[in-house]
Length: 176
Image 1: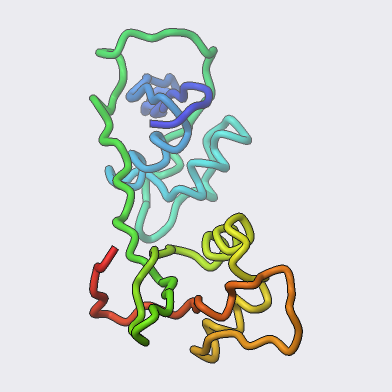
Image 2: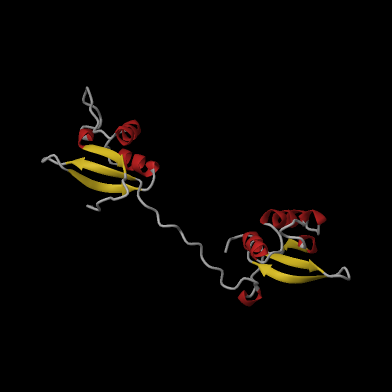
């Protein structure tokens, strides 16, 4: 699931001895497993990894038996896959990103053509600078005021008056 040191979960038995109940690829996997199995909170699991002992302070209303468990980092080596408690952990799904900013170009007939979409303002800034469309300040101004830039003097962006950046509406025509 993540890179890091493997972690083992121990449970304290009535006679004072302890038994290993889980082996995890990383502390993140161990903490998520402890919460999903009602053992202890992620915060307490992290504290357990740091202090490396059982503590009554881990007990809460939601996790009344948390003091019977502790997590320990173990030597980083190649463990057989069948030893891990969580089998084949799912890969984190990246949420589908929707464009937030669009770049329009003014056509000769007065219509606007969508050139490209951006997910963040930073992407729009980079694109404008790399393609020498307009400065970052003008990108921000065209987004906020929904205008085409106008300049009093010739500048280093001679075609800037043909472009504008705008926030994307919910219904965007994909005319790329």
